[in-house]
Length: 117
Image (cartoon, rainbow, N blue to C red; front, top):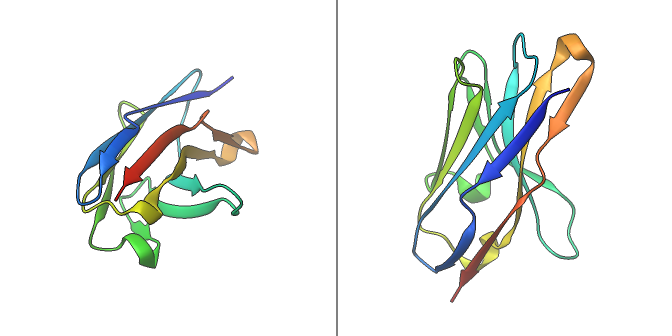
């Protein structure tokens, strides 16, 4: 069984920064893509950023230039540095890991990010 544990959420004023971290544990051979998603109240979960095992990154247009995703393949961790946060970034942020050899994607429990104006 693979588990993902997120940390680093919190309350911040507009213009501030937060760093989210996610660590995967369990019997892991390889994690292909790791990503961060978010879900605001009344809205669908959406992709924020993702990074492949080879380091290719993908960002939602709304966060380009403000957020940076990174990972450590040896430690099975992924981080999201969030700068210039805005109230519309308020959401529960979820970490996701794709392990194709298992046939499953794995999700963390979510961490709340609240940005006040």
